[in-house]
Amino acid sequence: MIVIRRRRRGGAVEPRHKRLLTWELAGSGFVFVVGALLHFAYEWCRCWTPLALFAAVNESVWEHLKLAFWPGLWFAAIEYPYLKADARNFLAAKAACLFVMPAFITAFFYGYTSALGDNVLAVDISSFLAAAVLGHLVSYQIMTRPELPRGIARAAGAGLAALALAFSLFTYVPPRIFLFEDGRTHEYGLDAYEPLFVDDDQGGVTP
Image (cartoon, rainbow, N blue to C red; front, top):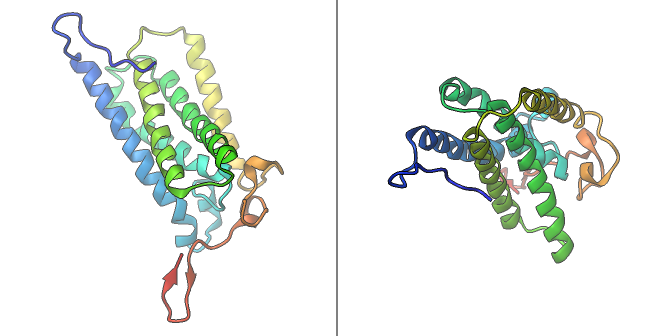
């Protein structure tokens, strides 16, 4: 359960907590906007292979998880200098955020598509935004709790490193399982790329 922590007297949100909450909600917006841009960046940059590390190269679920992970990690690096004096458990909070977002997207996608039989673009976009908000609210909760044991911070760091390695590697050498399969081409990784926009006969571009 997400709780906005308040002072005992007067019920006002503590200034430190309000500052943390503002930053985390801003992080939700950052992930949503930058993730949306990364969805198209690979095609916009003419399939520049190094960009595939961060941008989606196909329509598999895995490639959409990258769109939440990398912007979330970048925002954590941006906010750290401003929050290090106020936030507790920063590394654990960011690790939780960066695990919660992909987990929510994956569970929600397979849950609703199994019920409906197909995906709906508006639902996918809404669930991406919901994942960004949920992940950053979880982060806020952890940053406003008492200090956690150092072992948790070490475990969080190791988990983040493993997740970053997976997102760095599996676009280029994807496992041949459903999570990495493009539903349109039934291919994996870079081999599954198919343009999102095509030139029409009049020289325009159509989706």
